[in-house]
Length: 204
Image (cartoon, rainbow, N blue to C red; front, side, top):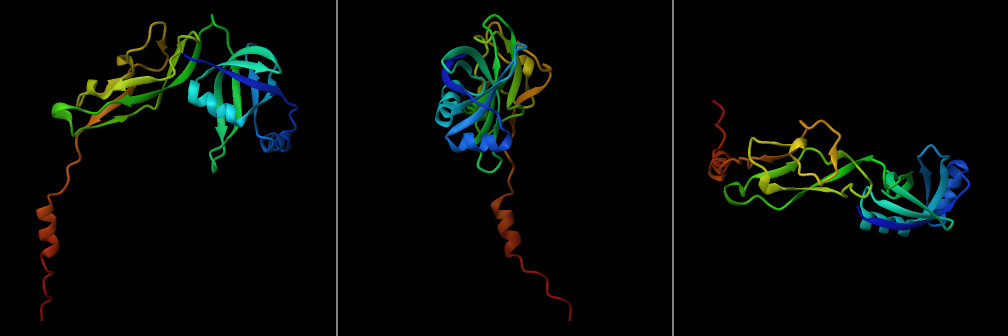
């Protein structure tokens, strides 16, 4: 997984009012936790957080510089405003290169059905899967080629091709993706005929 550098600064938590002030100044309130060390309230620039997600993804490994001091972390969780969808709080977790960590890794579909299955519709049943690995081994996402899917043969978590050193945490029998039959639509002729047929006149 790619490392992304990020500058941060410590902050003094003052409840919701303090968080509003931090956001008004162009920052996002955050906290660094983990390794049985005290939680450190920090703040990061909004633009830097956008860059972090773009470059590193949902589980980015972060070379965090807090007031100039380095710390290695993973982006663990972030909360959004339910209306504006703006990020309003971030949790970073301390990690070390030689430890095994768990993370929910996004699953994506790639390609389009071909040949006899051209009209079939692929769909994801799981948007993310729980994996564990050393931080540098953990993938940013898992891609499923839709052309490995077959009708009536769901792709299970145990069928995924994972990178070396990466292990599945969730139940391997869980369905990740399926290939659905094309939707059967009513014949236009039958529909038009039904519309054209006048209603029976009431008896005199």
